[in-house]
Image 1 (tube, rainbow, N blue to C red):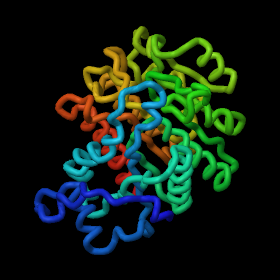
Image 2: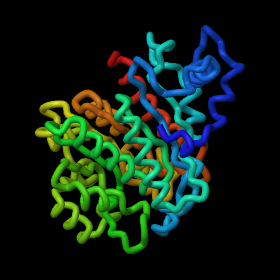
Image 3: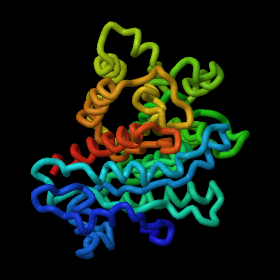
Length: 332
C-alpha cells in the first residue's frame, strides 16, 4: 500500500470519545479499531471495503464547472460516520478508511496515477474499493485500476463498468484531464476488453458527436428520457436494458456522478438540473445492481458542499455508501 500518497482525516477522531455501547455508530467502530491498532494496516482476514477520498476539483474547473467538490470527501464521511452500523454486524464493520489522496505538489496527471496505484493495490489485497470525490476525472484512475486488476486476476471474466450520470463524460483531452474525460480515457485504452454502460445521460447535457463516439467504442446508453417516458418503473426499465449483463454475476464497477439526480435531491454539484433520478428511483436500481452484479468498486463523485443546501447532497452520497457497506456486511 502506498502510504505516503495518502493523508489521514480528522473525521473519525470526532467519534473517539463518544462511544455508547448501546448506540454504536460507524464512526465509533472506526475510531475504536484505529485506537486499538487494527487500522494501522488494512490487511485483515475479513475482506473489507477500502475507502479513499479525492479532495480535488481541478478537473471540474478545467471543464468550466464550479469548484467546491474538493470538500466533498470529508463532508460525505461526516454523515456516513454518524450512521448506525448494519444490523448484526456492528462489531465486524467491513470498512477501512485510507484517508484522502495526498495531492500536494503533484500535477493532476500524477494525482491520477497515484490514485490508480492505491486502488489497484487495494483490489489485489481482496478488498472492495470505494472512493469519494472530488471531480469525476477520478473516474478514470478508479475504473482503470479495476479493469487492470480484472484482466490480470480473472482474465476469464469480462469486466463491466456502469456509469450513472447526467453526462456521458467522453470528452476528448484537448482541455486536459477534465472531469468530462474519464470514459474517453477508459474506452480509448480498454474498449475491446470491457463492457461499458451509461445510465441516465440527459439529452440537454450531451452532444451527438460524443454519443456517436461512445457507441462506436462499444458503449451502450440508456438515456434519462427513455427511463422517464416509460410506462414502467425505472428499475424495470434498467433491468430490461441490462437483461444480458444481469444473467450472470461478473466483476463490476459502479461510477456514480451525483448530478445524475434531480437538483431537488442533489443540488450540491457543479451541474445540477431539475431532471434526473429521485432517491427512491435510484435506490431500487442500485439494489438491483448490487444483487445481480459482483460489484468490486464504487465511486461517488462531484459532491460540492459549498453548492449544497442543508447538506442534502452529502447525505445522499453517504446513504449510497451506506447501502454498499450494508450489502457487503451481509455477504459474510
